[in-house]
Image (cartoon, one colour):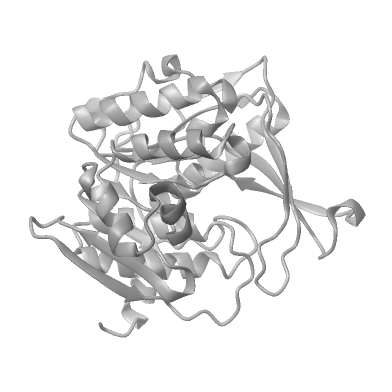
Length: 327
């Protein structure tokens, strides 16, 4: 559907994007001479995935006025992302990361250079021009509040305002323990933010760590008690688990994962899953269809080297969904 050039985005994500350098060959990063530059960042992965499916998506952040900041803005513009809420910061650099070439489906080793980055200086003031009236949906991750106290305040503010203006809110905890001062602060902060969301999307181990519960049923119950209407838990290759009451009646079920011939790189799978669930729910699909689409797009993401290169467009998604066995 075409949108007026000046119309504000209907979906908003926010956080930190980084320039990512992926090793051309396997091995320890200290021995690698050749790298490919790509884009990294959980929330902008989700923004790109939703934009490819035809949604009008904006992204709020800070980037440096350096070449990497320009690269990020150009890459997002090329993906159809509305960049009106991106602030260029002349005082602080764009974050970088270097990633090993993964082997045998293992998680690749990553080294970050993001301390003091432009995005870590995000504040509530960066949201002062956001048109919440136009917003249908806000997606938040647990990475942004870990960047700094002011970025944490921004997370609270955006989630509060989105909900106050009638937009739905999704939250992926996206645990990054190394960014937090300690586990207790991480747990209390992220659980408080999850309580401001309608749809909570943790991985099983994340949910166990954050809630102290063991089973998917009890993890979901924890967040439903906090006010969420749906909890969709990633179970890795086994698929996903849903518990919630999107249609007024509570239901719970597990949806089997999609078989993958070869796992190339697991990074970005959770973002692909979020794209699937969010897009399906915004499309008016059932909870089961949302979990199935989450599994399907997550499976696409693990079959490529980059974080978001495997995210499909709408036509490709329709083909993939048509190929799935009916439940």
